[in-house]
Image (cartoon, rainbow, N blue to C red):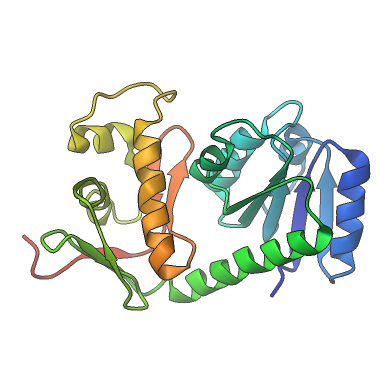
Length: 233
């Protein structure tokens, strides 16, 4: 299962066109951009079903570009980069990417990564009208498929903020207040780390893309219906 349209943002012209030609051979309509500035200046920057983004870009950096995309699009985002600094994997997923692979990587592996991400996205969209169910007293979350995710205290506190938001953004300040944490600037990674661990806990059980997503430097949103268990207070 592959998307019909895809955008590549990479400042390596030879690699960008080599990858684009390979994907066009898979019947995907591919656009390419040398940097995030050129993508954002395009008349339709958010219209594709999938994005492959390098992190080391001139102008708007890769992580910031992912955050901007997440404000406007639910498209799949795959990071393909040679950047190997500590924390890169966690940072790009926190920014909103669906998967990270490190260069060098074969074209076939990139295709498989695209298929895996896009298959989960399609499944999530099919399930989007069925609610996730949060039971704070039993400390568990039930997926639309009926899978049970055991939660810790912080997980319950975080997730309890989303049913009242009715699909809206929960500010970082609200989450920090509920967790009893000081509200620091966006360089503080404590809340990001909690969200990351919660996402991984859910993914380990469901194998699906978690609808809990970052909204650039504002807060987080649960992009699927989530309700409190009827027996909860």
